[in-house]
Amino acid sequence: MQLQQISVLEETFWEAVLSRDPTIDGKLFYGVRSTGIYCRPICPSRRPNRNQVCFFQSVQEAEIAGFRACKRCQPQLETVPNTAKAKVLAVCRYIEAQGDRIPTLSELCSHVRMSPSYLQRIFKQIIGVSPFQYADALRSQRLKQRLQEGEEIAHALYDTGYGSSSQLYEKAPKQLGMTPKTYQQAGKAINIVYAIAPCPLGYLLVATTEKGICAVKLGDKANKLEHILNQEFHQAQIVRDDHTHKEWIQAILNLIAGDETHLDLPLDVRGTAFQKQVWQALQKIPYGKTCTYTEIARDIAKPLAVRAVGNACGANPIAVIVPCHRVLRSDGSVGGYRWGIERKQKLLIQESKFLKDDSNT
Image 1 (cartoon, rainbow, N blue to C red):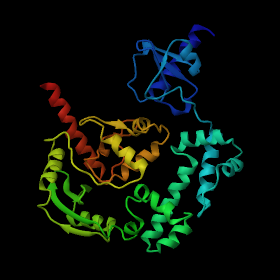
Image 2 (cartoon, rainbow, N blue to C red; image 1 turned 135 degrees about the horizontal axis):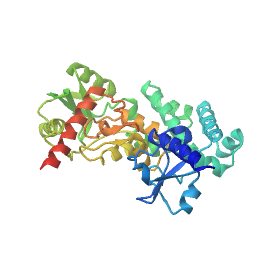
Image 3 (tube, one colour; image 1 turned 90 degrees about the vertical axis):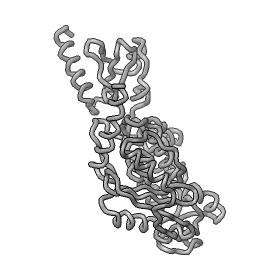
Image 4 (spheres, rainbow, N blue to C red; image 1 turned 60 degrees about the vertical axis):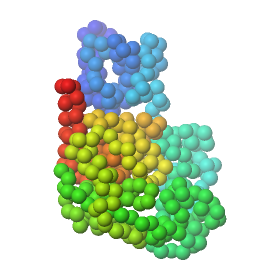
């Protein structure tokens, strides 16, 4: 190939890297001579100087040239063929259709014509959990729905595929956050005290149990926040008291106003194991900093569970303390926020001032 043709081709590659073109992911890699690292074209890292970049058509080619894999975009991980993705989705639909039973791995393999080891590996790579864990989570969701509808525990237990009551009660603390009876009664045995205070973002509602903070909500109207809390814990004993844990509420107000940069308050959050893993990762994002949903997925060792990470952020029951507002899309846009995009933007602007003030001191 002539030098002019090579130059034109490389400029095309470079444009694809600049635009983070997903259509060439797995087909092209770029190396940075100054760092000795190679990346995928979709890597979220800052783009290097053009004169430091070279291109490779495979991971092997980059590593033979002496480059190391980027820890952010992990180019050395196997890219998933579209046929495999389609088969994994078919497995998901098959599991969902079973209703009251969890299909065996051999049954799933027979359904999509895959070996057990490959299905296990590719399913976890794409979905973030094993086929059994996926089926078990669906079973748990069906159980929750039946219990919330008031169905007898024994009937709900067997209709959703639990073989015995002991099997359910062993898993209850992890999957339900409480015993089945308490969950059925939507927190009837729980005493919740809440307070509401005006803040720069409208109104702040903070709800607590005897163990710690169970909910932090933001909104334009105090009565709407009360309504949301009562819906979520519709059989709990809920009392408003603006004086209980006043120091906790003030600490959260200080964080919103930018007078505090870190909180260490007791929490009583309920969620799935995956949700809690995401929320813990969010709490590690430093004040004034942001990261992407993709980066959080990588941090929890589930790089393909980006959408699930977004859902976990949306389900975050404790606004501000668990800072889901610090998570952005890969293209740098703000993304969604349960309490409104404008509030997310205000929080990010407020926190960014801390970095500017800190750099000026």
